[in-house]
Every structure is written in C-alpha cells, then in structure tokens.
Image (cartoon, rainbow, N blue to C red; front, top):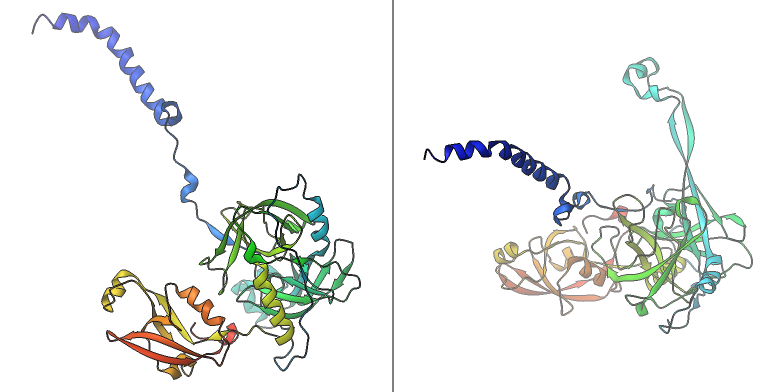
Length: 419
C-alpha cells in the first residue's frame, strides 16, 4: 500500500482539471440536450387546447311566427360533379366564379352599461341606490355569408348573427344593405338571411358526399375584418363529430387557413362550387393552426330549405338522455358485449315516456340497427319523420324487451329537457 501513495500524490495536480472538465461537460449537456443528439421536451405538448369560434351572443328575436309558412323553397344552382383530373396552376378562375357570392356580415346590438366603472363598486352604489345613471353602447361583431339563390337568400352561421339588433351585408362589388333573418338553427349553427338587391351573384352548390380526403379546397371569408381573403389547403377529413360544437355534427375538416371572421364563408372546390360553410377552428392560440371545420353543403342545403319553407328545422325526437356505455357499466347490466347506450333520463310525457322507456334501460337497437354511438343515434333519430313508429330493443333487469315508440318533433333548444 505504501508504494502507491507517492504515485497518487504525483497525479493530484492533474486530477483537479479533469474533474472540473467532467462537471462542466455534464452541465452543458443538461442545458443543451441537442449536443448529445437528444431532442428537448416540447413544452407546448401540455398547453391547453380549445375549439374556438367567434364570440356568441343571444338568440335573435326577429324570426317569423311558427304558423303556416307559404314560401317556396329557394332555387339553387347545382354544380357539375367534382373533377379529379390534373389540377390547374392557378385557382383564379374558381375564385372569380365563387368570391362575388361571398359577403361580409356586420351585426350589432345595443346593450346597457353603467355611466362610469366606479358605479359597479358597492361603496359608490350606496349613494345612488338603484337609480344610477346608465348609458347604451353598441357591440359589433363580424363574419361572412354566402348568397345561394337569386331570391336573395344568404347562408351564414347562427353564432355570427345571434342576438343582433341590426345585420348589415356588404357585397364584394361595394353594395351594402340591411338583412332580414328568415330563420336560425342553433343545433347545426346555421342561419338564413334575406337581402333585397337586384342582379345578385349566386354560388353553385356541390354534392358534398363526393368530397374526398386530399381534394384541394379554398376558404373564402373576411378574417379579422381585413376584407375578403382566399386561402388554400386540402380536405383533411370528412364526417368529423364529437367536437362539442353543435348538437348535430358532420364536419368537413380542412387545413385551409380559417380565422375569426371567416365563419359563415364558403369552402369551395377548385371549380368554384361550394362544398361547405366555414364554421370553426381548433386552435391553441386563437389563430389558424391548420385545423378548420366546415358544415357540408348538403346539410346546409337541407337546413336552408326547411328554414325557408317551414320557418324551423323539423327533426325526430324521442325525449331521452343517453349515456355511453363503458366496460364496467356493461358488465353491471349483464351485457356480454360493449353495445348500446344507457337511458339516463326520460322527458315526462315525451314519446319515450309514453312508450314505456325508463331510466336505467339499455337501448340496444333502433329499427333493427344496432347502437354503437349515442351522438350518431341522435342524428339517426332526427332524420325520422315525426309521427312515424320506431321499434326499439332494450335490456331491462337482464331481459330484452321490444317496444314501439311514436317519434315526436324535437322542440326548440330553449324548450328542451333532457336530450
């Protein structure tokens, strides 16, 4: 042992620099992981995400009464079938064909506010009581719309004009006019306006069932109020649902840039035909992230015709609140497979209640079609004509029962309980 000590002492002057260098190398690798080939963690991965749309307001009170409406369905211009041959080098012709029919919508409403911010303080309110002076101020919002018929019908989003006292429509050719609300459907987020102008540009409507993932799409609207703008992308997905935006969802997803103010504008094909109505964006920052959603043209066409001819959208309704099944619930009900939905609530006096459906029943099938998704089932029921009979298969107490329900008409959202 003694012969090693002198050797260690002779190495001591060299050990200190080596140790310091090793510690410095560790510190540098921790601070700059890319030096070792590792990627730094993505801090944005945990950032909150949100589905955003323009600020919503209160429902408009300018709809016609729900009496009998004798109004013919609007005449729409049909577009030829979509072409998937080699695309053009420029989409100027498509934009020139569709853009004149895309309008800017400016909605405004009057609200009451305190004369001074200090009046909201309880200390100052005690001197004035409830007779504090108040003033009115104007709140404005903007969006887009699409002229779809020579009669002046304009399609837009419900949330664009919701609660508006006045709606102004501006065309690309410089003309401006006030619009009348023909009807709105909050559950699909669509609204129909009407303007009184001559020689209106009209967009052609494509068959949105022919839209395929990978098709080129152009979004036309008024983002941030800067004026009419065109962006390009592709169709990223079709049939998107479960987004929590509307009661009835069947969105076209696109990466064409959609920003606040684009809502209600047109998503068009390379031929200039409308394939959808731009509605919402999925964003972390509030700006476009390449995930936008549009209501398919076929759904918009159906809503338009019903709002014009009926004054409302007529949907089938059972009057139940459905809950998705999970493996634990399925096992507790004695189900061998994960199928059906649980009836969590039944509207008293509603169609399901009259047919004998009870909370706690497991609904397995409707009209012979097995239920796999509660939201999709609700859409299927909505497509049934009110008054039609619908056979149901339910499980109650471990036994299957066959019931028949007479489908009712879905009430307006403000009158609903539970669904």
